[in-house]
Image 1: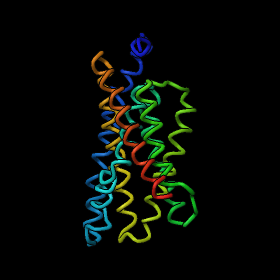
Image 2: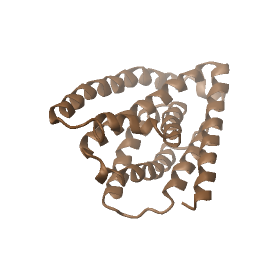
Image 3: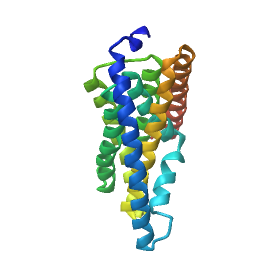
Image 4: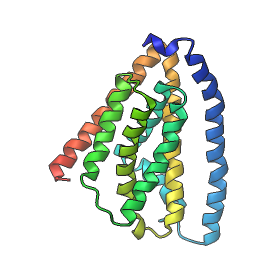
Length: 216
């Protein structure tokens, strides 16, 4: 645990101080433009931007995985602290395209549940693998999460606005995980972060049992 606070970490904290405001500003600038476009289209809120914003927080299995990505990135430090949260929604978009096209992906719900378990364990154990390993892991999970929602897009009224809202909400969940990672500065905070990881893994296990019981 002490190695997190070696002098090398100063660079990560300095990069974090510049990167987080930039990410937050980018999200805040994107929201008004998308909302304006949505309003100008004259479409109902259902199936549009607001529905996309609400959808990621409507399922606990998705919420915990999104938060875990940001939290794990904070544990790993720069460049993972920004690389993982940016890569996840981008790769999730690829998974969504597969879902829209009807490309089959077996065990979607199992994969989503497994993402909560494994990412939660990574946080709980303070795992610090190479960036390439972490990137590969979250990429697999992003495809499962994206496919699950992409399969629903053909039935959504305005897929473009829905997807935009969904990606922004996902990014905000990542940012909340990064914010939780700031607790690592204090001994009690490190305990809280590990406890959060254990809780995320427990939620994933619950959904995995449910998925296995449903045979999906």
